Each structure stands twice: as structure tokens, then as C-alpha cells.
Image: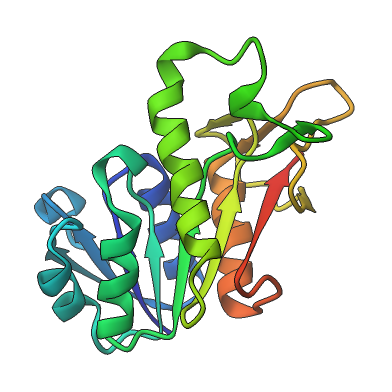
Length: 203
């Protein structure tokens, strides 16, 4: 497939490029500074501004799907959705956050008493992004939430999928590597199982 990756130079974006290339997809790597990506087979670096919906739509046109991997405080869900629809791209997959996942019935992670204050602005922006997607009636979207600890690590291919509850492993830790997250997202890209829905991945 031809995939437009918005936010291609970030920690998750670079791992998504690796996973997409591994599976033979063509990637348009959209970033403010695409020159930092270097030359890679199957990757076309393109400058793009996620806040300029007309320019973004022009870059997205002609792709089978778009992946959004941008910090939520740096983006506007309405603009991203509008650009994707204007470009006639049928699917939007979003690298989500963990804050909107439930840690107890009716209690989300971001609203739990010990959630770090410094992470709240970005986390709440991610919650808003998901809320906006849930009101979207036309575009086929999917929002994949990682675990609480979401860091670079190993590509194991061994993980669990969940729905709206924070996944916690047998060791009491809630974690997923960016490499394994990329596998789960590209799996969903290739074999959609969560249309207009959110799901999560963890060990």
C-alpha cells in the first residue's frame, strides 16, 4: 500500500517507517524537517505542516491510508480529519495515548489521583482527539493506545490486544515497546479489525 505517515521523524514515526518498509509498503514520510530521515528505499520524505489542512490534504492525496504520529498538543484533530477527507484518503490510523484508558470502572488513567501533573496537558489533548474521532461519521478511523510505559525497546512480536482498559502484565507493569506497538498498528493497517474504534496493545 501507499501510506502517508504524518510525524515521520519522531520516536514512534521512525519505528513505523521500519515496520512498513519491512512489509513492503511505500511510505510518504511527512515531517517539518524530512531531511533528517536520510535516504531509504521505499520512503519519500516530504515537508508538511499538520496545522495547514489545505497543504496537508495535497500531500495526503493518492494514498491508501494515513497514519497520524504527532504530539497531540501540536495538532488539531478537526484539521487532520478534514485534510484526510479532502484528500479522499479512506483510512486514518492514529498513534494514541494511554490516558483515556480505564484503570477501574468509570475511572480513566488521566483522572486517577496519582497521574503526574506535568503529563496532563498532552494526555488531555489525546483524550480530546479520541473524542473528536468518535463523533466522526464518515471517515474510517482507528486509534491505538499504548500502555503506560511506552518507550523504545525490542521488536518481539509477542503482545496482547485490549479494548478500553489499561493492560497490565503479570509483573504488574503496564508497558509496550515502540517496536511492538508498530507491529500492532501495521497489523491493523493490513487486516482491519477495529474500524471507527479504539483498541490498545501491551505485554
